[in-house]
Image (cartoon, helix red, strand yellow):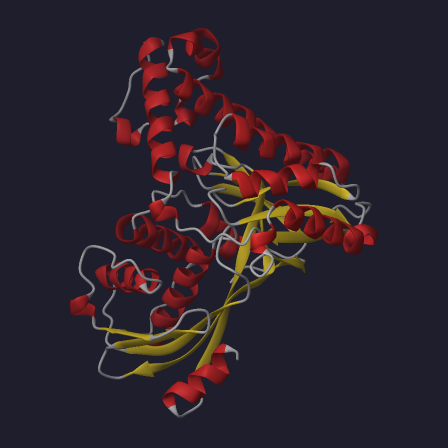
Amino acid sequence: MNCTEKYTKLFGSEPEHTSFCPYRISPLGAHVDHQGGHINGLAIDMGIHFAYSAVPDGSFELASVNFDGTIRFTREEIGERARGDWADHCRGAVRMLAEKYPINLGIRGVIEGSFPIGGLSSSASVIIVFMKALAGLNGVTLGDWELIELAKAAENRYVGVSCGKLDQCCEVLSKKDNILFLDCSNDSYELIPKAAGMAEFDIAVFFSGLERSLAGSAYNLRLDECRAAAYSLLEFAGIERKSIAETTLRSVPRDALDAFESRLPEVFARRARHFFNEDERAVLGAEAWRCGDIEEYGRLIFESGKSCIELYECGCPELITLYRIMADTPGIYGGCFSGAGFKGSCMALVRHDSIDSVTATVKEKYLKAFPALENKFTYAVCRSADGV
């Protein structure tokens, strides 16, 4: 049952509108966006579908194809803290939009995710598709960057995840067959088209069978560790510092890490080394993509995955196993965790003529290692897509 069918079944009429926001992958630039680094990203042709209608009294009544039950609330009932259910992303969207614009009409709607939650930024997709729909019903036109900033604020200030803007930028700014090359320190970006001579590839997404919520993971702890590393390095180097909450590793010269890394607690040093190496990989990857060198691009992606495991220390046994299987499977140019890496999915760029053998091999080896996940593990083959 899709979102339109469920809407009609629940509410006894057809929805007035439908809309879609894509998921995203970020082949390079893992965990550097919140530190002002460079990222590579693209939207994919899977995502969040939304069937909805306006509610004159300003209330909200929401259901999901992926979860049971119906959630109802008014603007007055949203409050300042998340409730802990999937509709928090919608509540956060309402709150951020209402702080800036008059919101008179509410929404009755059904949300549908086209792939299991975890690693594709479904949370940002839900916020974006819902916020854009609510704005449109209330006569509010949001520009791309305004939508990005409001969606990020909903996740930061209401849901409670201290994310950067990678997810929102990929899902709003992306263009099919282009890599989004974004500098998160100043929001400058370039859409780099796929080179004419680049070998054909497919995007494979392997869902581990383990869903995740960033608000309950070590995501925010890693952010604090990065900030502490940056603040310490600036102090050692005698460079003027802002508050620790405003300090990022992008503000630290690379030679400061080289000079003072030994004075950092080892855990802070690992986070800093990951940042500088991953930021460089994202820059090199953009050039490899521009030149059509998919082999080099894939090599950098595998390096990124290794750094996430060894230096950033994210992942779980299941995701790490998936990464290692991908690294040993012929036909994969490159693969890594998709998203934050705390449970969820892995992604891979796969030779177009090898996609069937690759997906079969990965599935067989993964389920041999984790047979209890046979009914939860799944995979999808997708292509790049335009943003919302």
